[in-house]
Amino acid sequence: MLAYTYVDITAVESDMILQSLPFFANYWHYLLISLVSFLLFNTLARLSRVAKTARKILEQDKGEPESLNDEQGSDENDGEHLVEDDDDEPALPKDLEHVLYVYTRPSEEELIQRAREFYRVASARRTIRFFSPDPVPKEVIQEIVKSAGTAPSGAHTEPWTFVAVSDPRTKTAIREIVEKEEEINYKKRMGKKWTTDLQPLRTDWIKEYLTIAPYLILVFKQMYSIGPEGKRKIHYYNEMSVSIACGILLTAIQSTGLVTLTSTPLNCGPALRKLLNRPASEKLTLLLPVGYPARDATVPNLRRKSLSEILVEI
Amino acid sequence: MLAYTYVDITAVESDMILQSLPFFANYWHYLLISLVSFLLFNTLARLSRVAKTARKILEQDKGEPESLNDEQGSDENDGEHLVEDDDDEPALPKDLEHVLYVYTRPSEEELIQRAREFYRVASARRTIRFFSPDPVPKEVIQEIVKSAGTAPSGAHTEPWTFVAVSDPRTKTAIREIVEKEEEINYKKRMGKKWTTDLQPLRTDWIKEYLTIAPYLILVFKQMYSIGPEGKRKIHYYNEMSVSIACGILLTAIQSTGLVTLTSTPLNCGPALRKLLNRPASEKLTLLLPVGYPARDATVPNLRRKSLSEILVEI
Image 1 (cartoon, helix red, strand yellow):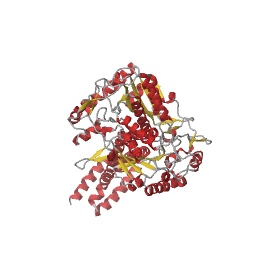
Image 2 (cartoon, helix red, strand yellow):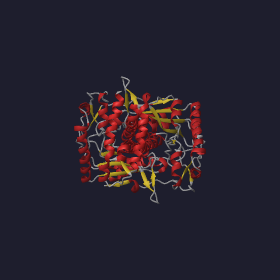
Image 3 (cartoon, one colour):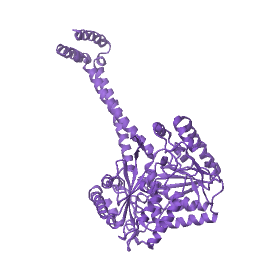
Image 4 (tube, helix red, strand yellow):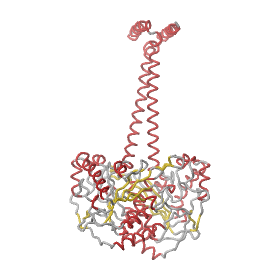
């Protein structure tokens, strides 16, 4: 009869509370259930929305992709994204003219010779950490950026901005932002094993090259643009398009006879974006110091994968 | 005294139920609160984990990035990712040798001349949809892929596989997969406006170039690799690294004197991956038909952004 005893006590207590707070005393549990349920379902709905948005962004930039053609965003495109764009202006004029493609066909010997020559130049490229302060002609940087701008992009959006910094004060400000975050990375964010691992590469948070190299090229991807009616137009595949442009940029730097360091400064994006007055629609992708190597520049003695490790022939 | 009336009724009802189920009758609301709370908190925790994972992937490939250096994944790196890797083998040997970087410095005149020449070649590149069936020497494709393999990558993981297909039956199978999905895209997934928009580009779901072009290069990104102890090693920044390699690949094709079409076939990735026997750790990034253009190949008469639209000088 234990259960019955409990009931008796509760009944007595209930009676006592009922005298002072008759309605709430009797219904507090219903109210509590309602309140808890409301709060939890509310949070659930919010989290669902977050997860949905995240999944959408992931699919958009990582999943089955839309076209990355020069001309448009359609040929091998992501229909669901395009359907969303139904109200938007078409990317290209309706009466787009088509012209004959001008082309001179090389002989097979020429093809082989040119492909070998390109490989000879490309394979000499290395990431350089030690720069000479000697200036580089501005025109060279302009030609290099023009070359990067020939990259194909999703829906021909050309979603890139290149910021070429030679002004010493701006370079100093960039270095301060990067070194501040890097010092935190080295001293706090990383484990001991990580810093030990780094020793063979002789790197630390001091980034002298950021003020020594004559140019810093900061590559921003434009995640969206604002259309004529103030409507946001998402640049699908901006990450891939900008990275392809960076591949061309690296090749242009190499072909020209200059050196660079392909870096992605951790945690510095927003601060660098603000420093350089770039809009919120842009995000830092790469930071490349560009110039001549220092006379005593060294590189780690690395090997690349062989052709058989990266090519499958069918 | 309305509240009091309710209390009376409830008391009577309670008493009746108490006779048969004394314990549960009195405590059912506590149990219900506990059950509802448990279920909701459980779901909340699960959703939180989903959101956290999604955020991590987003940050990993889109947010403040880790290093994309040739040598390692550390210099300007994402510490939080590296800390997770604490148990892993270091990417590079501890006694990594450093050697003097061999370099011949060009004159300023040479720099300008080379930068201009590179731009001349790069800017002539166009996306071509009409191919000649004429074969291309295998060695040319090999040199082009070797060039792409010189790209820098996060932690020097070189996370790319290039599949070069010249076998007619495999090309036909690829075309069937792509056209099947594209027909659905054109007929079902897209709106009427979209197909109207496409008319100026004269494209449809028939992709003749997939069987006509002598080579199809399918670029796969390796999202992770399996370490010696069977442990998964995530390749951070595989998307960016592979896209940079594709930028070099496109430039190699262009420099050699061949043409290509930068395409990302919608919804075909998994089927093409299976057809080509690539592992689950790989994901299709680009599909590039490579060859000579058809004699009567046309291109839309497009313009590119001017230098002042893409370059900011500071």
